[in-house]
Every structure is written in structure tokens, then in C-alpha cells.
Length: 116
Image 1 (cartoon, rainbow, N blue to C red):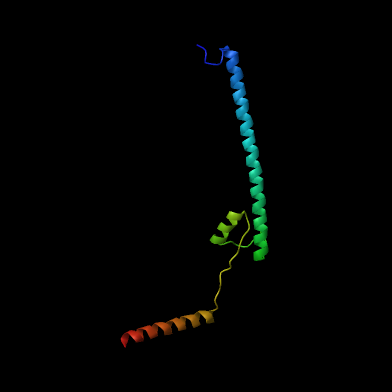
Image 2: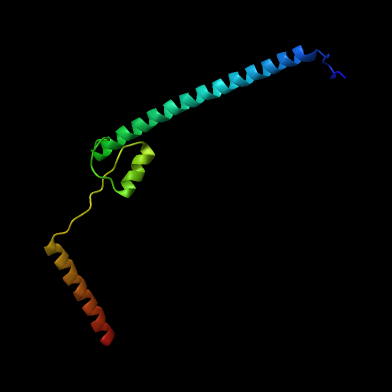
């Protein structure tokens, strides 16, 4: 039984239809792949530009060999390699003692106020 509007053409007609369908699908897939490559290139350019601007703002180079902290590494991964390095602050022994003494005085004042 033939379909409406289309005469029965047999296996040759089916092969032609299948070939046309596959050709169309292949052309669309190649177009999508081309668009994907174009988008990937544009995103890489944006990433490189952002990394360059970030390095200008921070005064660091994007290929620094310094150790990265966890947060700086996450930022670097997000922008594709640029790092923002936050160095750990080091207090001298004298500064640590001064802070300790000041805190002890504060707690002593709190305890004295409770007794009164």
C-alpha cells in the first residue's frame, strides 16, 4: 500500500531518501562542530585577555612559578592559568608576644568586671 501523496518507488526510493536524510544530518553535525570550534576559540581569546588584564592589575605574571594557595588556584582555574598570589603574613616573635599580652590584659579586665 502506497503512502498518500508519494508513489511507491521500492528499495531505490528508500535508499535515495535515506541518503538524503543522512547527508542532511551530516551537514548539520559539521555545522554544529564548526560553531563549537568558533565558540571555543572566542572563549580562549576572552580568557587570555582576562588573564592579561588581571596580571596587569595585580602586577604578577601569568606564568609565575610561585606556590598557589587553594583560593588562588581556584581563581587560576577559572581564568585559565592566571594566578593571584596571597602570601601568608608572618608575625615576628615580638609582635606575637605583644598581641598575647594585650589579649591577656583584656581578659583580665573582663574577669575583674565580673567579680565587681
